[in-house]
Each structure stands twice: as structure tokens, then as C-alpha cells.
Length: 304
Image 1 (cartoon, one colour):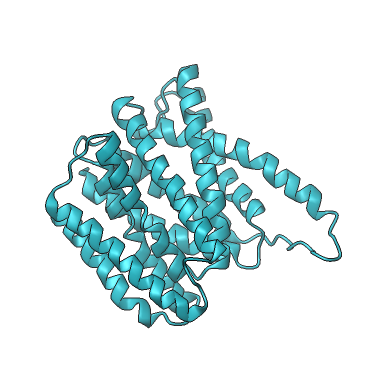
Image 2 (tube, rainbow, N blue to C red):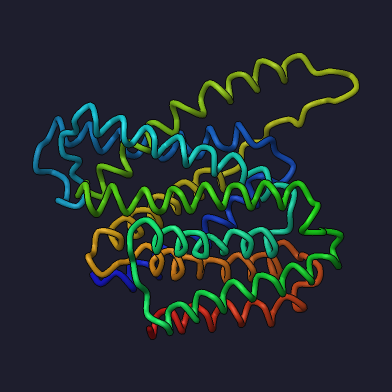
């Protein structure tokens, strides 16, 4: 499949992931939610690895995980560490910000990815594609003005800071993905399987520490109680589908990371609709012009 349909498929599932993420985090602590979602992803790939070992040939070729060297495992552990830092920041931000603001902030990732891709990977998007990405990012600035109506001042709100930091880590992860899948020619299944397993290994100790400390609640700062929701499992499944399509797009020679990342952020439209219609967030319609700007930016990027 061509990189553009794969990128849009990833955007669809990523938008569903953002929606489930917001639902799972409402009145819930972050670390246990991260543990459940990463544990679900790791369980799926662990099961596929077991099937591959016990019944060779039973899986579709796209799901087969080739043998990996120790250096390859170290490279994917680094990938997991970058993603863990990004997720920890973004989950904290999504918990405290309206999804109709948090998702567009995350959509600025292509700006940082494009800048780094031009500087480090010598990618050269066309003029129309640069205009498309720029239009998407300018629309984000419009959203920041609407955010003030909800008491969110972008220049001093710490949760906005967490989202921006998580977005920067996400952009770094995107560049690293292109290296792993392009120059190092790792299979998408290899990257997704092992980084999912290593993510669980990184989050499990943090979540265990949270469980231990939450058992000794302080009177002046009681901890939130964890509530399991099926959206935690659903967000993991949506992420698996989104990442598999994303990694497959990056494997295409024409799939420049700056373009794939930009199209993938079409997920913002789904998250915006969820914020307005599902979560009943205020000032939703005032954000609509900026959302149209994001649609225009994505269209220009695709036409370029």
C-alpha cells in the first residue's frame, strides 16, 4: 500500500486512540493507565511471538518478527525510552487539558520533525508540502487564542508545557523511526513488537512505585483511586493499528517522515469532534476555524 493511505489509516486509529485516552484518564491516575495500556500492547505481541515460535508459518508475513541482534535490542530499548518520556508527558497533559486543545498542540509535531528531517536527514519536501505543514501549524496558534477563553494561557500553563515537551520527544521518536525502518531496514513488526515489550518493562517499576506509595495516603494530599475502564484496552488496540500503519508508511522509500508525520496528525479532527460531541467541552465551535485550517494544511500536504 502507498505511504499516503497508510498515513491516513494511522491518523484514523490515532484519533480513536486520543479519544479513548481522554476517557481512560478522566479522574484516574496516569501511571496505572499507562501500565494497563502498555501491558495490553506487550501481551498482544508476546502472544504473536509465541505463536511464531510454536507454529512457524501460521502468521501472515507482515506479523513475523525476525531474529534481532543485541545491538538491535539496544536500539529498540532506546526507542522505548524516548516514547516512554513522550507518553508520560502527554498523558499528564491530556488528563488536565481539554482534548480539543491537547490534540492540536500535539499536532505541532510535524514542525519539529520537518525541521530536524531537513537538517539531519537532508529531506526536501516540495513547496506546496511546506505550505501545507505551515498552514497546519498556524492553525494551532489560533487555537491558543481560543484556549485563553477556557483559562488556559499557553505561555504559562504547566500542562501545556508538558504537552509541548511530550511533542518534542514524539518528534525525536519519529526521526528515530525513520532511521530504524529506513536506513537500518528493520521490519515494522520487529520495531513494534520489541518496543512495546520494552515499554512495559519501563513503566512497570514506575506503576509499582505508585501502587506502593498510594497505599500510604497522606492526609494533606490523598491519591486518586484507580478505576479500570475498557477504554484502556481499546486505546491500546487502536495504538497497535495506528503504529503498524505508521511504521509501514515509513518503510516506503517515498514516505518522508515530515510528510507521514503531518498526515498522521489528521487525528486531531477526530479528537476535536470527540471533545465537542462526546466530552461536551466548552468553546468547541470557536475552535472550528482553526480545525478547518488543519484540514486545509493536510490537504495541501497530500496534494504536494
